[in-house]
Length: 116
Image (cartoon, rainbow, N blue to C red; front, side):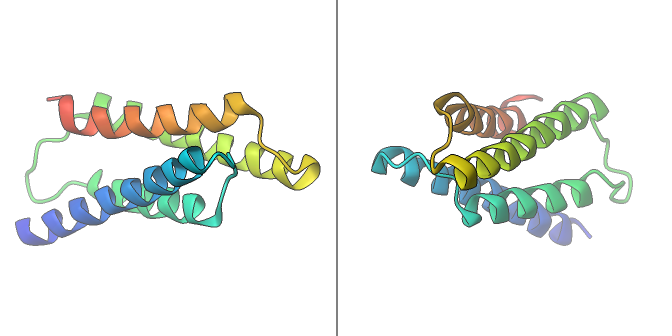
């Protein structure tokens, strides 16, 4: 059972890597767009995170940490949705929304690693 949990943790981290990696590519490229890959990364990280939040055979869960990460994930999802809508309408994403997505994604990954 522990091996399965570790596989889900890996999938969760890969989801954040896809989201943050695609954001970095857009930031470094100077285009500051929201891509479909960002949405996929968010979905992968979110679904795997919800699976990890389930009790895994006696593992102690930190519900405060799970709650904070879930709220941040929902905010990132809202920003992706708002940014995508603005991108479709005006052709660009407001800088505050674009940079907030990257900062919150990094913060969510940092919480996962550093909060003990």
